[in-house]
Image (cartoon, rainbow, N blue to C red; front, side, top):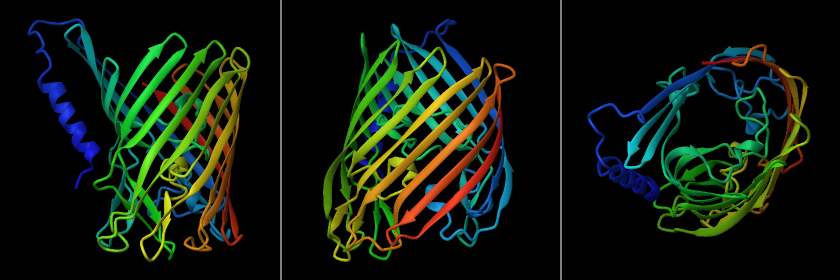
Length: 389
């Protein structure tokens, strides 16, 4: 069954498209279509293989859960174009205003073979599809909880720990003011759980949408945002039939980008709360643990990152990035082999010989620690070439 939010989005989109004023038959200069994209080639060396290109994305994009424990994996080299993207924006006149629709694909889709084994496909994957009209945005795009300007310029597709890069269905209102912007949103609900055996499962049926509010301050100094989220974590009887245990929780996020000079900048994000699991660092931790009796225990999580970008010349720059997340889990329901701490660091050198091209070399180090104290490391060297068209 689809979530209530998805159903609401479908109804609103139908009303918006089918009951808006009809377009004039003659040419209207306000009708615009722009198409673009980028070609990205990645060559990645992993000191410890974390899966392989056929069975997992983990050797192609940083996944904190896949850092090997212990460090027994063999090294590997992979090359791919899967993070290449194609996008288009269509502007249509609706009365005195304009309805814009944006769509974007990459080639990082996952499929399962006849034996049920997942592998990385080369087929298009929908990243964004949303429409904006006046102060409203409806569709699938980045969560309102994130501040995209705080995200560092790095080669890796998934980025440092401590960030929110999930894309999901939402209904969002935003208003621009003299000092910045305000945002209010209802977003797709989904709860992720860890059982007493360490297995994971998710629930996305019949849940109340996630409620998000954000205030963003902007000026010549840069920008800073403060965002809050309220979520219902609902087990929906997955452990004990007819037992619908659920809990409400909240989280806070502070993020931004500060201008240190003409080009140098400092980017940061800090988050804390008991409903961050699915949102933070690609679900590095689940939202809650659940006992054998179906009792839900929310997971308190602290996460953040800091990135300094220095420009050596007009077309040459580097970023130094540190990120980490920590989960305070209920040890009575969380297995000793569950994750406790993740950390990552990045350093790179990026060169843009022409405006549309960037060549970059980046080193990434990942760290993972379990509740029982066991830990593991991952070192990765990545060369990327990007051309935008």
